[in-house]
Image (cartoon, rainbow, N blue to C red; front, side):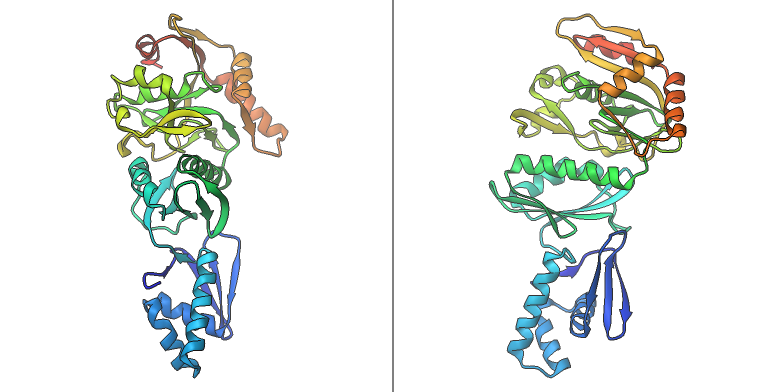
Length: 361
């Protein structure tokens, strides 16, 4: 336990001889009595965990065996509550400007996750909005957030899925949004294209292809959150999930894709991919156009303008979710936005034919 330290972003305030402790931005308050306060402040000041029992015994005039037992129990409690930084590979990530900490104590996943999420790595600074811990091995991984168990009994591939879902849920809870879409958002630095699509529409393959030339930036692939005030797309750049059918069409565009490990997701082989950090959008971008993709093997590429109602119907089918409670002003805002937004339907059978049609959108 010698490497145990308090997690970043904790707030504290004396209350009599005790201490009130809370995670910045969290929802729980911990009450530490005088003994616990003494141990906490010693640990926070850099005292090694192995030396705490001797200090406690001297300060409170108790025998060494009792002090050691009390220290062990207190440290285990703080670990269970997520108040102490666990041992393992710790990553500081930025998810749409939201600071997130991830510690991977699962040795088999530590390096693959560090490599996959490297484009999201940020310099540790602001207190994280959440502390995630992934630990375990084989089919017994556990995922925790702020010391609370989210799920246990996970194999490595399912653990990655659950982590991505937990990150998306965190962003949905903390970032302001009016409209959530099953859509990709690809920007050019000033605005973005929104690509809503049902599963197997070719959305992720098309997104990866659009990013391949290095000139565009990723705001998100599976989930697009449009801001409350102006319906600009929030950055939520989680890894793209590319199914086996997209590997060959993307091989010439993304030569590094073949080096990514094959994972299982919902019974299908997939590869996860993110563009370089320079292609991760740093801020929300207004939507300049809507493109609804539909992959049909062998079909010629065709771009058709959509009427506002047709665009709205396809958004809803993607699906879409409006932040509750919906009021007249919110519905009017959405209707006015879709009426002003240029929208197209893209049918394509090959990326070679589809990409030129989108070059000037």
